[in-house]
Image (tube, rainbow, N blue to C red):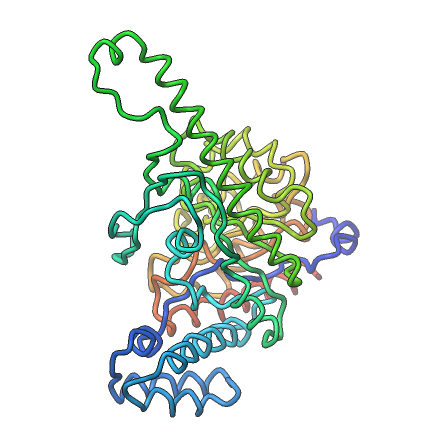
Amino acid sequence: MVNAARSSRAGMKPLLTHEIGSLAKPTWRVKAAAGRPLSEAEVEEARTWGARLGVPGYTELVDILGRYPLSAEERQQVKQWSSLYALRFFESAGLDVVYDGEQQRVEMYEWAVRHSRGFEARGPVRSFDEKYYTKAAVVGPVALDAPYHNDEFAFLAGAAKATLKIPVTGAYTLADWSFDEHYGPGPSHAAADLAVRPAERLAKRRAGRRQLVLDIARNVVRPNIEALVQLGATWVQVDEPGASTEADELELFVESFNATVEGLDAYFSTHLCFSDYRLFFPALEKMTACRQFCVGFANDDSRDRGRSAEQRPGYEIISRFRDLPYQPALGLGVLDIHTDFIEPPELVADRVVHAVEVFGDPSRVHVCPDCGLRTRTWEVAYAKLRNMVAGVQLARQELGI
């Protein structure tokens, strides 16, 4: 049974809706920012979405896109317009908490590495959605070169109508997606060394790995977050798609998160990308600085209606998050971001009501897509989000909250 009294005391709206992070960059933003000419259809896309979303002054952007070539200042303006469009995209869809879909960033890993010391670019790597990022090697002690989200946050803080949540790539993922040419034991070419001392080399590798992850946490990600908090950021989502890459390093992932945020004055959450979520337990019991876990479930769930555990197979693990001793909220993934299927509001409501019944407290259930929506077109992403908000409203009405 839902504990309505406990929900009302929680201080945060029950069944809070928000996005996860990424949103596809419009073609007009990609081509114009790269200094390439646009077709009439691409310019018209900017005009259409500007009017549809109610973006103030969007005709100024349309005028800029009609020019060629663009100056460096105009290309930067296009990036900011893209941020404003994405902000209004999420707000217009009805979300309670928003950001800009990472419109001003190159890519979640590469953007952080570009603004840090101790990394050296190695070459392009293909990501899961056929896009590329530049993978780097750690070649020296890591440190923050300069805060790398301040400008975008300051811009959005001045334009947002809804609450802002800023996504920041986490330390474990930054380490895991990099080559380590500095912290590890180094190469060995001596057969005797490899044969006689494998345990010692393994211990050195693990010690080096731990030092790398924690140095990135303390010297790169934490000072970047500290700068955001000083600017007024109140909710920071630490993205960790690589968290479960090594099953024997989940304690290290938890340690790195705690080292990143403990003692800072903000609401901290994390996004755990598609995985066998059972692996995270019991390690998450020590992740007490995390106030919310955003987790993808719809990808593994049935599209059939129903609220029972048997009818909602994708949500079997959520009771493990409910039972964490420090009682964090769960960012409940209800939209499959790998398909163009538009989840009906009634299906979203079934998933939400099931989760509330499991938790017994709607203040501990937030609602979001499984992951970032950059794999979908704006038309599909918008329809999914509108239906998600409508489904949450159905659930709120049914639950009387």
